[in-house]
Structures are given as structure tokens and as C-alpha cells.
Image 1 (cartoon, rainbow, N blue to C red):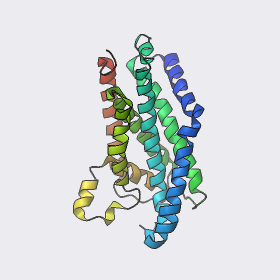
Image 2 (cartoon, rainbow, N blue to C red; image 1 turned 90 degrees about the vertical axis):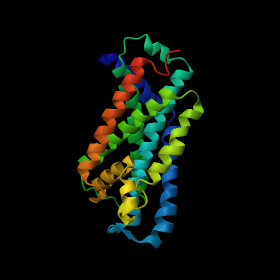
Image 3 (cartoon, one colour; image 1 turned 120 degrees about the vertical axis):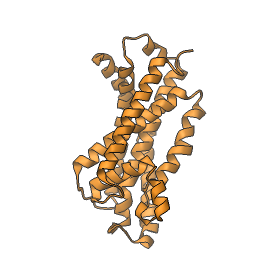
Image 4 (cartoon, one colour; image 1 turned 60 degrees about the horizontal axis):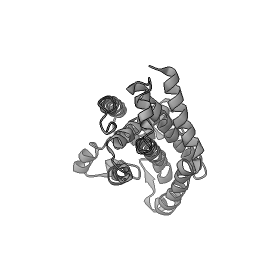
Length: 253
């Protein structure tokens, strides 16, 4: 592990997130405010309580996690593909950085963006509701593993992408539907048995349930299942990213 090389790349990616904060951090705040105004106050008043808590309190953890997922995925995908597009990635190929250094360096900036975005959304949430914390450890561990998962997913997306349209394809047609079907705005326990079983194949269900448990102490799936799914995804996606970079898939002409 080339520690200096890793820290240099991680610092570069982190500074990029802060430098373009108007693009990386402001949009989630605006979007979340609209979600709370529309779904929380207008629609939530008609829905009433969900699993024993007000609807606004129920959807708050889901909105935070949805923001973190989108931010971490898009950050790695766009940053890594931009380095391919500008040919700056070739400098990394001839540097003493290992594939582990490159992967960890890129996902560090994305995890930072995901955590910062979720933190800002949390601050916005405080203008609408009072947040009670059931388990800080559950909140931080679920958030960290989720942002790692989607940072690695964004990296793999960028490796295979051949143009900017390919970078936006997965977030639009895969991530967005899975997120909305992941229990952000409803409890999957309200679904018929068949659709509950189908929903459990959606990994985002486990992420949002684990994160919601950290705040409210309620979950649609067992907590150990959330960690089992998240841990498996992180290990599997990291291994895949490592193999692809080692073989130079999509990187070497």
C-alpha cells in the first residue's frame, strides 16, 4: 500500500467535492426540501402515522439515505470517467500506485460526498421535524457501508462506460427505480406477501431499513440481514473493481 500515493489521490478527490460544492452539495438540499413540503406536509397529513410514527419522521431516514446513495454513486462514476476521457488516468497507470490505492483513493472522495450530502439533508430535516436517535452506531455503520457500496458501483460503471451517456444510464434506469421501490416512502410490510418477497431482492431495502432503525428503532427486515447484504456487496464490488483495473478493462487502448 503506497500510503502517500493513496492520500494524494484521496485528497484530490475530496478537494474536488468541496471545490464544486454548488454542484455536489446544494442540489440535495433543494430536492429534500421539496420532498418534505410535498410528501411530508401535503401528502403526509392525509396518510397519517406509519409504523407508529408520523409520516414525515418515517420518510426522513429514507430521504437521507437516498441522497447519500445518489451522491456517492454519481461522484465516482463522473470523476473516474472524466479521468478516462481526459487521459489523465494514464498517469496513474505508470505511477507506483497499486490498484488498491486507486480504488480506495477514488471512493474516499465519494464517501465524503455521500456523508456530507446526508449531513446537509439531516440539517434540512431539523426544520421540519425533531429527530430522535435510537442507535448512533447503526446510523454511522449503515451510512458508511452504503456509500462505499455505491462508490464502488459508480467506479465499475465508469470503467465500462464509453461515453458520458453511459455514465448516466445506470442512475436513471436502475438506481432511481430501485431507490423508490426500496421503502423510502412506505413500509414494505404494507405490501401483499408476494410483493414483500419480491422487494427483499432489492438491496436498497436493507440499507434504508438499517438506517431507519438507527433513528426510529423500526425496521422492515432483520438488522443482521442489512449488514450481511451490505458486507457482501462491498466485498463483491471491491473484488470486481480490483480485477477490472488489474486487467485494464476499459482502461488500456
